Length: 224
Image: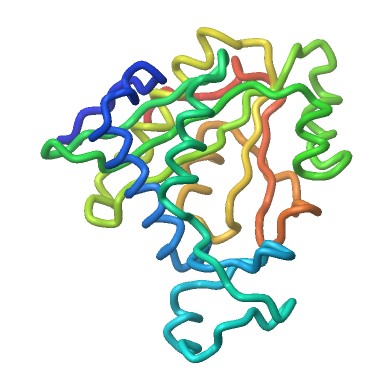
């Protein structure tokens, strides 16, 4: 890797350019990713419509699902506030990739209680890992991982995951850990290599699958 993986926190995001650059990369990745396809959404049922769908249906101004006017899936101002709010969480662990003075990647997560995970993703979605570690005080949820399409294929995703979980193993070794992703995401190979196992589909989130591991201390980062 040539780029530099550096720690991300709320204080660092107070620098306006960093927050703006991170927000723009974040939005563009999910808007144009062929798997996630979150370019527009229906404000009623929150169904996403991809950029490819938009190009084929430019004359359509209402969602086919609810006959409601489509809105941007990732408005910049709202996303900026979301990132700031998440970074303020006391359990937040995050890193960004800086390459050629540009934000080119990011990864972060935080701790949730088991009932919060059930509320977010459906009762029992992560019961396999929770039951395998009943003494865990919480679940470290890897919420984000993204790398600019301009620099993908250089190992940056692995570097970001390694940075996040190296810190997580230090802070929360006895906790469970979980994540959600698209079944065709390139990141699946990274997660399974370090010990995460496939759990199943997510009832509350279409086209997403769950992965988990009973104990953060079991995550294997050697050889990444």
